[in-house]
Image 1 (cartoon, rainbow, N blue to C red):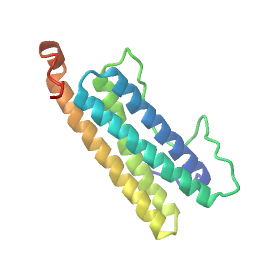
Image 2: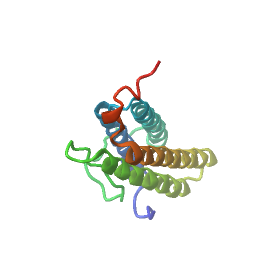
Image 3: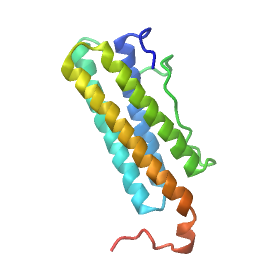
Image 4: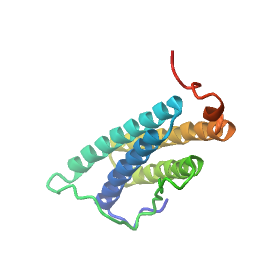
Length: 162
């Protein structure tokens, strides 16, 4: 991902906003699904995005101590978004979320080259790896969803725990 034309401050603010939006997507989806396993995974992902936001805010404050954290409404940084409207199929939304996770991975891998501090570079690589892990979780859940999308209709108690 080409990020050289953007200032680090702008990139960090966009990253923070993206993590907040991702958390909102996963929380919204978790509220919509009946499958308790999928709900748990979505809530796990929402929690992960919250941790990413906290780290990025900490990094922002470390780099820009005297600057107010004001998130942009729009940005030219090329990061995709997800439409979670009720009219869309869950599988479509998950596919969009998968694209966002891959874009986030690429974003963090590109962003790390903008820092000289090896600890920050390592942490951004960890974030990139985590985003790839999120993609893989969503990929497995999408496969399950496509294979068993109507399973709840036939076995409504399938996902109820002991």
